[in-house]
Length: 123
Image 1 (cartoon, rainbow, N blue to C red):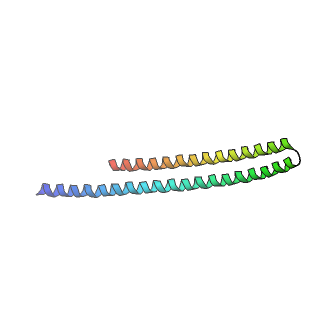
Image 2 (image 1 turned 180 degrees about the horizontal axis):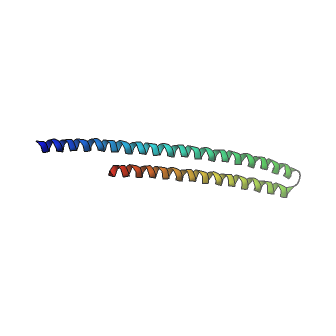
Image 3 (image 1 turned 30 degrees about the horizontal axis):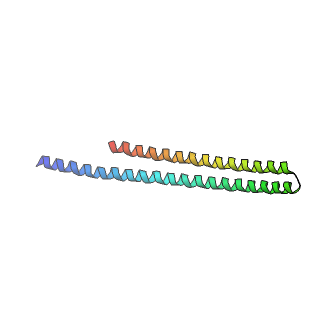
């Protein structure tokens, strides 16, 4: 009888602890997903802002190039167009690098939370 009571109480304790572990893992997964989503939104916002800035600069330089071309300054117009393209490309690359860095940061945080959940599951 005593063995049955001890065995039953042990099984009940284990069952409740597995529920707590599963709940903790789920909570950590949700936290990682929220952080990744926030970083993705931030990266997209920065990339969009830099794209708009590059487009404005490129449009302004294209207008200057058209004006220079209208006055017969062909070389100046080509120079302005190339300059606008370079600036726009540099800003696009910068936005991509920032977005990639934030993605890596989110993956790192999510991986760390997964390891934390696995570590606590072992105990």
